[in-house]
Image (cartoon, rainbow, N blue to C red):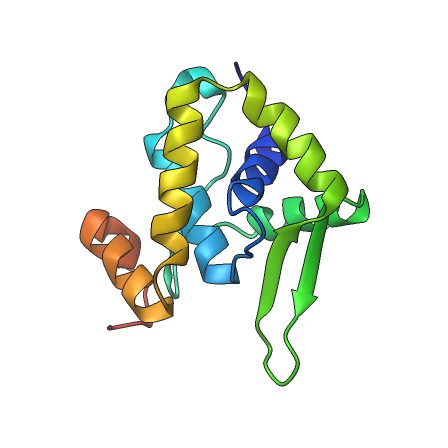
Length: 145
């Protein structure tokens, strides 16, 4: 099954099962999906470019904002920090699970495993790991972790 940007992002959020993503986790998750999902899924979904902290595409945030305006995603600011978090709403979970049910089981499993991997790391560790896997993404980096 082919999916679009909004569908892959929503499915990616839903597999976190009640957890949320920080901006760097969401960017790196979408980047890794673009690199590793088969073209038959409809990707690549974004146009990642080397930036301050590696692979980055502002469209990831634009799609999340669009989904938020549709009531499918909650973008929340944590009190006392400038960091936002991204998670599906209950309506988003319902729609995301519909998408997941139509995706190949191996790909759904990969989405879940990658979600756990990405959310299991802090900022520095995640950026460093992606740099190790894809050294070309650090060419414009300000991060030297």
